Amino acid sequence: MDAVIRPLVTLLALGACGVELGPVQPWEPIDQAGVDATMLPERSAPETFRSTRVVATDPVRVVTYNTEFGEDPEGLAAAILGDPELARCGIFLFQEEESYPDEPESRAATLSRLLGLGYIYIPAREKQGGTHGLALMSAFPIDNVQKMILPIADNGVPRMAVSADIHVGDRTLHVINLHLETRLNAQERVEQLRPAVIDAADDVLVAGDLNTNWVTWVGKVPVLAESRDQVDVLDSYMASLGFDAPSADSGPTEHAFGLEFKLDSIYTRGLTTTFGGVVRTGPSDHWPLYIDVEL
Amino acid sequence: MRVLLAMALLATAGSAAHVRADPAAGHDVRVAAALPDTGDTDLAVGAKAAPARATRDARHAIYVELGGRAGLWGLGYDWQPHRRFAVGAAASYTSFDGDRITTFAPYVAAYPILRGRHRGFVQLGPTVSRQTTPSPFPEWDGLSTTKLSVEAAGGYEYRHGVLVRGYVMASKGAHLVPWIGASIGWTL
Image (cartoon, rainbow over all chains, first blue to last red; front, side, top):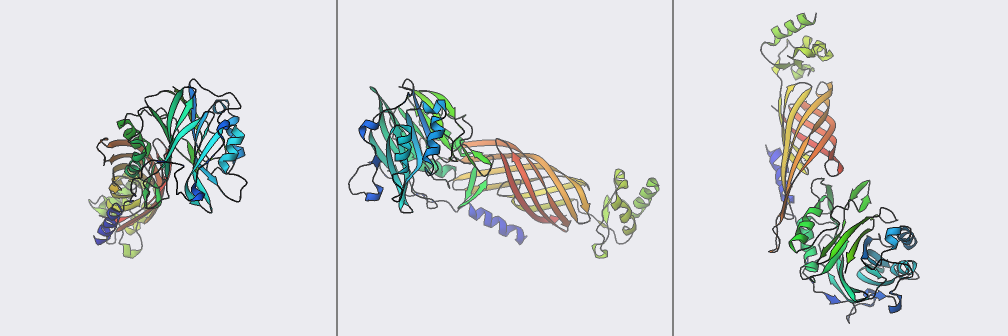
């Protein structure tokens, strides 16, 4: 019987090996003093926050898109401008943009120039001599930009949320762009998300790569778990805060190893929205997800 | 001829539903009482082996799994009413980082390949999985969901006192997921 008991004890003990999340950090202005020069945000000139093409303004169209390290700005721009629905988008929340000193400009700068939009790039962490972070690109002026380093998982890397006000004429859309850790189980994912949304404005759009996979993480080892989709848990948590999940039925937004996952979501509160779609194209492992918002 | 053969077997095996030769004789050939099986070539071999030290064959098995039908691990039981068929179930409970997962996976199995102790099998059955994510926060009640999927598996089994299985499987619910499993246990 010992041969039965030992594996069982081992398996149950695995259940106790939880991921520890770090402390909650406050929202901070992105331009605060004392930040390491390599981690400073980067933005285009104020006059670039306008569009060189026709974009939707009433309702305004918002896209969230993980660009897979922004490695192929030309391919990303071609995918966006080549789709008539995406080409009308005036606000983009990007994840996984990067910048390296041996490249002529940040990848966000290249992409924004190709899209004809203004941009703000906010590094979340240093990576191989460069930086990795989030970007906002817009045909409309952006201000009140703040960042929050999310509770760090001890098996992961620093993750960040960025909030901003985007002014569409005399109307303002408050957005929160975020990118959660990959290797988290459902309850930990809620714990990492919570600080970014718990005190959010009444009228707000939250979007990004929430990494809501259907994997059970045993430490750093992913175990596919078809019946355990973390999207359900995050949708439930956001609903408890009064958020709608207009992209709940979007279908998969990411593809890898022949499998598809719904890793990206859009949540809104106090806003009238119409879900747009997922455009399954482009060089990234993620697909852009968009929504129309009446302000 | 088949009737005579069956009568001879029944006379030899008495009331035992399943008999097999002494493993020491090197013939682990199951002799099925079920008459429809008389056309199986194993039966003819069994007719020679059966008279010597026949013992009751094991219809029951319990096992533990790594991976497999019940997810990360499982505790299972199966019963063979017929040498080519079995029914069984695997179940598990796992707690990871606050998430609690209970899984129950009954199945039917067929053995299209029989080579003494070595067998090839296929399994098919539903899996019911209940996941509970408790809330550590006052604003949320947590979430419990119950999901149903269908799993098909195929692989190798060694059954002779011990039970050893290795198999690949596919689970289809909201997604189609490949998976693997390995089992070890005892036949009773």
